[in-house]
Image 1 (cartoon, rainbow, N blue to C red):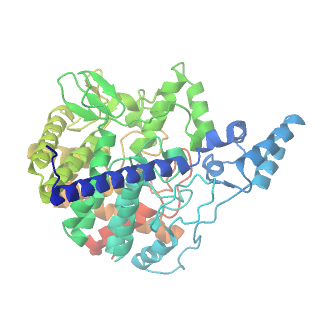
Image 2: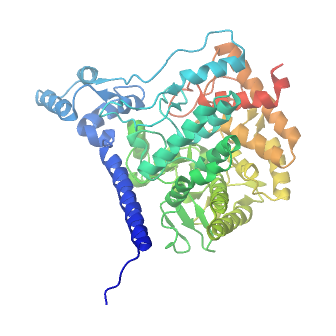
Image 3: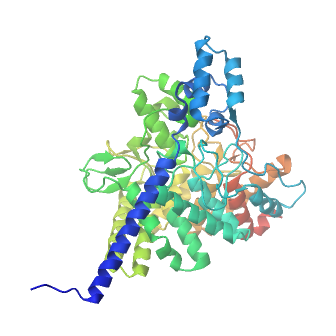
Length: 540
């Protein structure tokens, strides 16, 4: 007997096939987008890249990887080969060659607001100047990854979007009434997840092998406060993909082992670390990384992996990651379970639980509630150090703390993970050991790295202030805020601009690290704008 298919079933089959083909097409689109991405500069330019970077043709190694060629790569490389056939190029000849075949990309307004504006007006006037339009005409061989919506860059040498910077920038954009720019920024990050499977450190080809502290869920929460709870379900696929990236390999991980960004401790607790999928020198700091690896007998590939993982942390660099607290060549980022990263992943798990609940999937919601609870318990039990009287970073293989007290210890307060007693003890520790005349210092240690004393940074002030307020420590929160505001305003009166970081101890222009303190500056503008609204008396 011939079985007849009902019209309703046929329609369902057609719809299913349509969805399948649409899904395949979407996947093909993502694959095509990846295939269209040009190789990163080291692969694209080969020996030319190595010579330019190792010889220090540019004072800043980031300069060359952001240039765009004036001719197709094969033409440039053929010309370079002809030049080398004539003999070794002098530094001067190599500089002339680069000037001939490369140019700076024209991306936006380099002006600054007029002098004399009140600080809030100065910040509001900066946002358009730090905004870049959608990358519809990105040069073919640029290292820039195109974005579909307008976006805000930090400023100075950083003329691309940066992942964790942007969360703090959104806070200021909201305070300045730039609501559409907030929507654009979140949509851009979802676009990056969809196209590349994760949010890169920044929208550059040379950043694709790593991410940065995962603030995407916090961005979605911020946008939901503006546009309502539909935001959670709209961005659920991106939130899930973000989580899958950070947790890749977790299911098969044995106790006491690690895979990429996931660590399973001996007791079975599942936590995360920073990582990079490549173990070569960073392209934007190539010469520096080569020189760092030459100062140690450790395998160079391990040093480079740890430098890259340190860059993924956003704290590039800090005594947090250094085995001896001093020398960059002792960096060991991949050996460390950081408290700030794991606090952020609790928040991502909680946000996924909420999004699935709103979508009508209680089973998935319960799963992520459970995962968030397990990770929160691990943070409270494992990442709390009685000797530090603070949350700390943990050496996952040896089961010891690094012993470095840093302002990252405030992240469990910011996300409401700490017990009340831990919050009480941590508040005392922050006040006694990290509070400085100009705000909260990053660590107690002066290593010469930029994420150490005497420097303070806007995101760390914000996290500590809001975390302390969450646990009722209003007085200490206000002290940190007013001191930080005063530091910003004093330097602004002197220099007529806001900068990337501040010396909160000596009130001199901040230093340390691989490059000078940058003007601009996205998260400084944003956090100051928000704090002035919270503590207007601090500006009087």
